[in-house]
Amino acid sequence: MRTYAAKSPLVMSSRAVAFLVDDDPVIRDCVRLVLERGEYTVCTFASAREALEALVERGGDIAILISDVEMPVMDGISLACEVARRFPRIPILMISGLPLSDRAQLRCSFLQKPFAPRTLIEAARQVIGCGGSQAA
Image 1 (cartoon, one colour):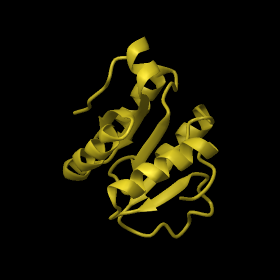
Image 2 (cartoon, helix red, strand yellow; image 1 turned 30 degrees about the horizontal axis):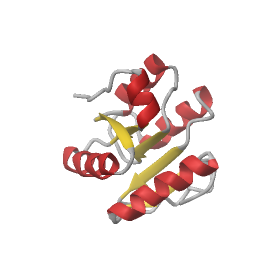
Image 3 (cartoon, one colour; image 1 turned 90 degrees about the vertical axis):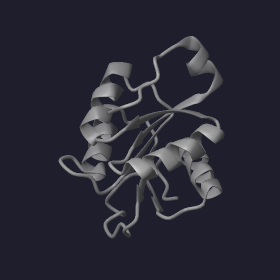
């Protein structure tokens, strides 16, 4: 199941929209709460395919994509590659409980779980500020 905020001028002008993708509902809810307490309107997705479909529906109009690396069917790296191909201006922050050994090949930032709420917000701000091309 996904939570998808309708595109409206009020939402778009007052808070940055973040897409959050994680197959673990507990982690997804925790990260969503942290981001919402920050400055984001958060759309959550349990799968990469759902997130990609919603992103296409929005025409890529989001501030940041935050995705878990390890997910069934379509993993986060495949999602990041597809988003970078279709929407190269969207900053991407990958999160995972496992170290990302091939992150030099991945052109997006990475934050290893567990992380403090402040660390997540700072990483998201940094990624948005630099266009997502630097590692967090």
